[in-house]
Length: 116
Image (cartoon, rainbow, N blue to C red; front, top):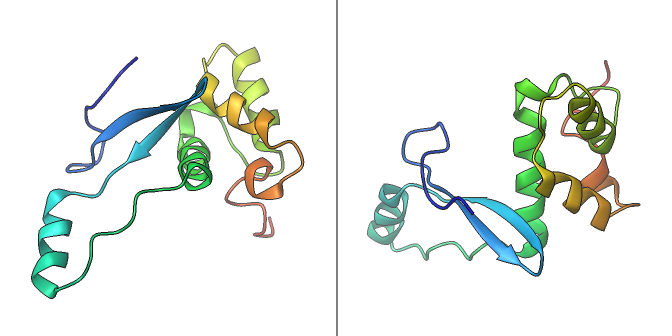
């Protein structure tokens, strides 16, 4: 299991969180953000809930161009298309999608509500 490392954006660490048999990718804010919040007197944000972490994983999948376009199809259809094309989509995305079969928050991509 991969832990830590850069997410491609400077200052954002990526790590895996495991709950049961499903792995989630969580993105954390840069430490400077927390210093700034403490200086303002603000509280640190609460950790992501399981649903929020899963939705963030799916948003990252939507934004990953290497799996092809995501407009006009569901996330699961996109995942299967990417797998058939040998693009090796993340298996944890499929696990999340299969665990929420009828929920449009999970099944539809970020661009679902925007007309083509």
